[in-house]
Amino acid sequence: MKTLRISDDVHQKLTALLGELVAQTSKMQTYQDAIEAMLNQSVILPLSCLVRSKVLCLGIDISATQLRRSLYAML
Image 1: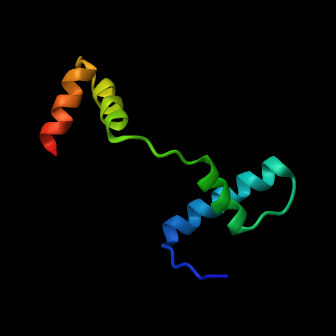
Image 2 (image 1 turned 180 degrees about the vertical axis):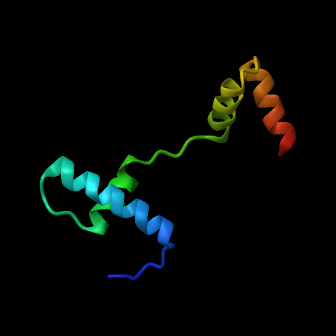
C-alpha cells in the first residue's frame, strides 16, 4: 500500500470518476478502483497521431508525408 499526494483539483476529478463508477456498477468502489479504471481505459498515441489530429482540428490540409517530414525536422 502506498500514499499518493494529489492536488485538490485532481482529488475532485477522481472523486467524480469514483461516483460514475458507483453509478455504473451499483456497488461501492474505492479510489484504487477509479485509478485502475483510468489506467485500463488510457491509450498511448504516437506523436504523429496527436499532431495529425491537431492539424485536422485546425483545418489545415497536409499530407501524411508532409507531416512526417515536418516531425522529423523538429527532432
